[in-house]
Image (cartoon, rainbow, N blue to C red; front, side, top):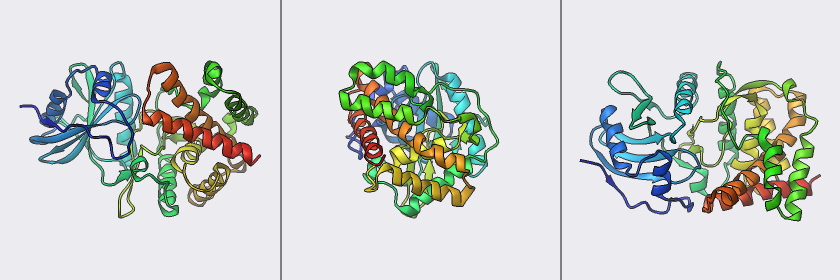
Length: 333
């Protein structure tokens, strides 16, 4: 018997998406058998209600209630089997190092990476708390300090995973800007050009590198009422300048803070410096990195909308978020 799907309500975030769209990512018309398979293989007992988590652009995440407790089944999009194996390996290293990620569930043979009809899946505990889309606010200072602390801890993990293509990576800013030129108005062209110019002379190779998360955004960080922070989705974690994580935190995670982006960058830099130290070169480069991160949020979401038909509340929100960061920076320079 297949578990019962709840009628997917609009997520508490207010962001939109459809079960069909997310199921298609995993190459499946019906997600119920996948949920039942995951529960059976991991010995979770009967499954009650489940729902698709409709944020995100690539994989399919399913929240399910089981006899063994609430879990999330992550089904990687077809063709991302190598990404699934890579991600699982990174998660094991990060969790063992103390990074706050939900525990992975294993099958009877100790395997945490499973396969269902050609789809790679992992099953993890569902962490307590809510993401910052749901909370509709930026992190408090105490929460931000804990988030920055988690980033600093991750940066000490001894791992250099194989390269993975991330269309939202800051290194793709110039080619994406060129591709999106026909879709930009006059103001947007000026703002994006300024972000490109800001980072043109940075010697990235001279910056301290580490294993970074790469996507510390509102949807990938949970905070619980007791202050516990959980970091999710390590699919694009890679070896890069560690300030890249700080730039994404500034541009995305702290958006809607009344302080403009450059002031948020300074606050985050100070928090990180207190935890892990920050070189003079990193402080200088971080402003440009955050500027680029705002541009990538804007351009990445605009590309999803205009080129890939992702006409969702999430794309609209990220377009406005990126533009806000670009305008903040233009007004303070």
